[in-house]
Image (cartoon, rainbow, N blue to C red; front, side, top):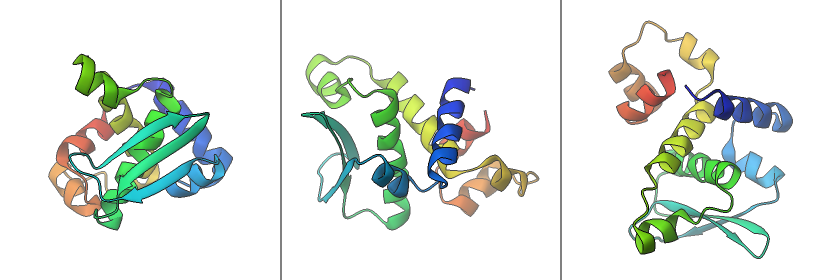
Length: 142
């Protein structure tokens, strides 16, 4: 479990009074662009001192929420790292960044309280209940 990520998420939730990544991004004056993307569900870009998050407009609202939280993580944790460039041009392994972003997103979207309420549930049941892949639920439970 990455305590640094958990602390960052908890501070954001406290500062903004919400777990909704769209509201947090709005409070941080970042830009969200909905566009029909190809090959990716979303990505983060730091361009001319602007934080821009692109989200595939064809995703369901639930998927957009996760992608938004994931890209918010990149904005906060990996601001200057151009992971799309690194992945497609340098073949640098970006797995660490993606795991950190997924960890951040799941801690933002699923509070400890919401998990405690269903502490008897299996990973599979939690996955169905909350609508996230079992691997993401496992990552959150670590």
